[in-house]
Image 1 (tube, rainbow, N blue to C red):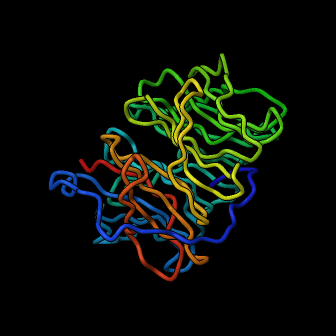
Image 2: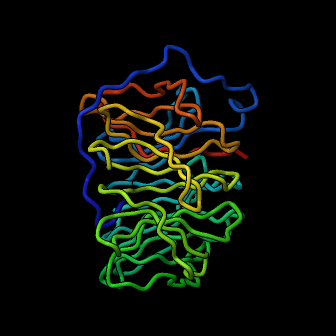
Image 3: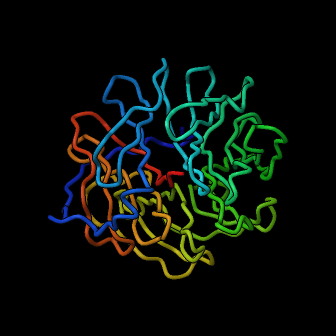
Length: 294
């Protein structure tokens, strides 16, 4: 779930490479892609092999299931569900078992992301009227608010060493990418674009932040250093590119992209080359995260 942001809508034409990024046998064996699809009606969470085969549904209840976040330690998935009203944070095992509502009160929550050891989650909460960022234990206990503004702070992403959090804020007018210490101190703005920047995702080695931007009047994926230098555009077409995530070794990116009014899952190399479509369905597939299977 994305709180208080404008839905991403645009037309798309994609150039797709005719061959798949090289995937080793080991990658195929112990890694999978988790994603959201409405192929069976409402939005549910699915899992598939990283070559797009063996698609299986993990959630099977009324309501919508959104924003899956894969634990870097493997085997666990955090997600947002509207099974209860308002939106709440759940966790489950990689096979769909053990679904637990870890935050259960009268406020809306979204945007979960795991700490490196899987012991904590950083999330967005609406309990302060505007969206603010909180850190909670993986079981939902000990919530700690780390932003405090009269504007919205949301879409947090933990650095791989847990020392910093990238996030989105409209504190300076439009939605831009910021980085702060993990206790909420020393927030620094990274992007200065005329459009909006969303969905930061920290690379596994901590050297890059992947994000989505419409500052060229279309939604494309970009890389930037954590100090705001070396902005690099990865995709450049009339597609609406969507939520993206890194492979565990940082060599590839999996992402959603809306093609002809239909969202599908794609994979590409970290430099934007060798783009390959993983899903092909007449309904929408989006919000992928890369899961290490225990």
